[in-house]
Amino acid sequence: MRALILGGDGYLGWPTAMAFCRAGHEVCAVDNYLRRKIARDTHSDALMANPLLPERAALFERLTGAKIEVAIGDCCDFAFLSGLVGKFAPDVLVHYAEQPSAPYSMMGYDKAHATLSNNLTATFNTIWAVMQHAPDCHIIKLGTMGEYGTPNIDIEEGWIDIEHKGRSDRFLFPRQAGSLYHTTKVLDTDLLWFYVRIHGLRVTDLMQGPVYGLSTDEADLDLRLLPNFHYDDIFGTVVNRFLVQAVARIPLTVYGRGGQKRGYLNLRDTLQCVALAAAHPPAKGELRILNQFTETFSVNELAERVQRVGRSLNLAVEIQHLDNPRKEMEEHYYNPAHHGLAELGLKPHLMTDDVVAAMLERVFEYRDRIVADRIMPRVRWR
Ligand code: USQ
Image (cartoon, rainbow, N blue to C red; front, side, top):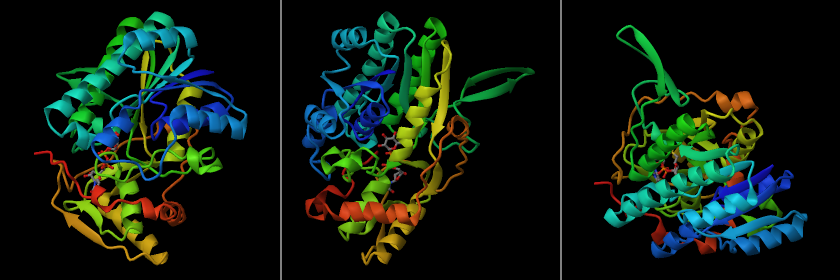
């Protein structure tokens, strides 16, 4: 396949580009370094230094003989994106090119507007570029489990059958996101669904939970190929933050009571899920929605697990409950379906103690680079 990876410099985009390339596909990775710029502006640099995309691609080629094409540019620039889609003619386009931080999107008008404008424009331009130049291309869009929020009913996989006054129909499952960032993903889904209905696009929307980890088959070839691993309050996801806090002997920052449940997955499983979606495209005119996570945990369960494994490695891990900077339910029902990817063949890498220990050991190698004042939450929802 010819695979265009939008957001190819990111935590998920770069490992995806390597994995697709290694699997024998023609890959072009696209990025404008927005995440690096926001990280610099908010003093949220990643744990390890990540070479720029052309350098990473050159190193990957030296090590594997496989070539990742690189295009530096902004997906919000329609002339750039449409020219690229026209020239590259992708069979599959994986769209990660979004501002992915919930806290950043809650920092005030400018950052909220930047998130809304970037995310919606990148999705809109993707749709139009594909419609104009590659109408059979399969768009794989990274959505988020956060689109559904935490309703007091079971969460279905994208769609729900509703009976109302003796009649029934199928609708998108109700969405009620907990941050402006997550809300942009709801709006993305609505845009995609509109153009699928009207123009017969072929789309998979992957509702992904928080991802953890830094090891993949390709990233393990050389430390300079590792994904950008954040532990700060802006870009760091909760498990990655807890790993770094454990190594730095900073008490684990559980927000509020810690009963918040989410569906989590290992970075390796993100790669598997995207590959499976690409290998099994939906029909034209279909919006396929898959819930992408392998296990659900509360924040307390995650903290206790990192503490237990950390202590077995002689790390003195403590847990602290902070006043919750977010507005979210801290105790709630959570039962999301996730059959679709398993039916496509997903073999989960679960969060065993060995997996946690291996991640702690890798983070430990970078302990001198941990900056303690990047840990505490700086952004409050209210
Ligand atoms: N949390 C803590 N302590 C921390 C950090 C987070 O208790 O130090 C809690 C949060 O309050 C939340 C849960 O952990 O209840 C998950 O937070 P997170 O920061 O790991 O994840 P979130 O902000 O929801 O966003 C991340 C990614 C985002 C992706 C999303 C999937 O940054 O791009 O869309 O995970 S999901 O959460 O399923 O919507």
